[in-house]
Length: 467
Image 1: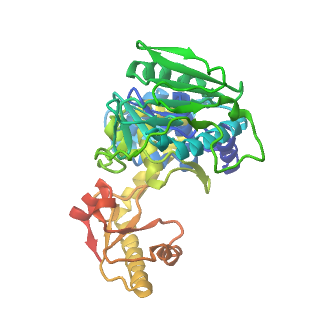
Image 2 (image 1 turned 45 degrees about the horizontal axis):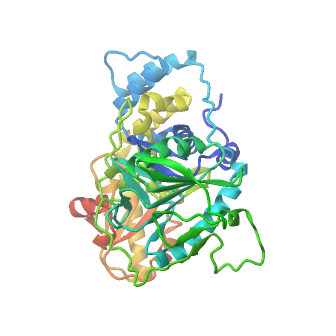
């Protein structure tokens, strides 16, 4: 059997059955599209598109050998080199019958209404929230409740004792949380999130069902959610945001004569004068922690600070046969957190065992020839630096990343060039560098400490090599 589906099949699965683009932390697990099924489906899609080597690079070979043996009921020899152990496992997999798991996250053909409503509410709330003394935040902004990180479709917050705003998340319950149901993804919104929002004290929780064309309004009363109905004029007025009214019927009306600059759904009945945006506090943010995932045979809980530091924007794309989550580093981070969520013993069951055998052989071969590979990469790095000096007169250039580190290059390694001078046309540099090696990623990084990740700063401080 084929170890990986053809690219066309991967694309069809990605388009028709990918999980909803949501990355949340619930009970220490990375939850994708509201369910662990969605998490497991995304993990399989990343493994199939990027191959086993992408995951193998993130944990020690010994751990992968143990995972492969445990996941497929193989026996490990008491001693031997990595290659000898791998050969021993390879002899046993001929008797293994691989059956792909039946994973389905939702029904992608019915997501248009969800996206249309989300866009409408986002635009309407952004225009009017300040008028009632609050702000609205969208999908990629996390709401921290305990050690969980939720990313509702829309939240309103006032920061008047109930919560505190940080750069990348809201700590504490928002005054109003809105979730838009999507076919195949409803369970978490109606159960897990309902209970957690209630326990954390979210005053208003709205569930919008595009298929049934209805909105369920839940208001916290003495610690319990009670369902409320709109007033006699058809508007619902949340108790937590005085002066704001919502017209649910407008969600289902598509009028070509609507003014796109006016809010269809929200209405301000009593404005707040002199509103000022809340100052954000410092706290964990993208890249604030070193990327050192703890990937083991069995699941490992992800800390909230790790989730905020490693989780990219939940933008799911499929480019050149590979899933891309926000960026290449973002995809790597999501893959690592999914491996932590499921553990390697479970993760290996998503690909045929021969795929892991071949991936491990590839890693051993790369490590065996690491000196030659690094020598080739150094030649390319110097060639890239010379082009930058010729075309843009850059003088001070350096290299960071795995190329300057003692460990071998791996699937995620690249050449990262650092420059210090002001360079207003940096976007042009990528055209200059693109054809050096089509199979190698060359990144260009300006030295601005306030914008660099903890990994980048650490590498610049300790392992930078000037060219």
